[in-house]
Image (tube, rainbow, N blue to C red; front, side, top):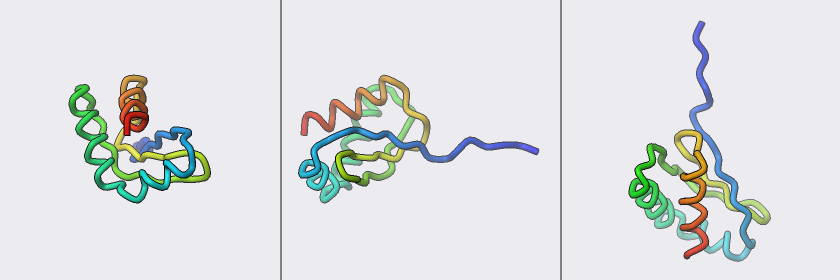
Length: 80
């Protein structure tokens, strides 16, 4: 019997609710830009989609994100 690890991982970033709503409203643009930033940093993960909860943004990725990937995503979100 073989086991698999989960196919999706989540990156959770605390952010103000009104900013989270703005990000989610144009999620397709932000996913594209996050993936460009990840590709520029030579990362092998891909961001799939964004959703928000009360005071955080949740970005679902294809693999487990390491510290460099987390910093790349967080820097992008802070700069928009």
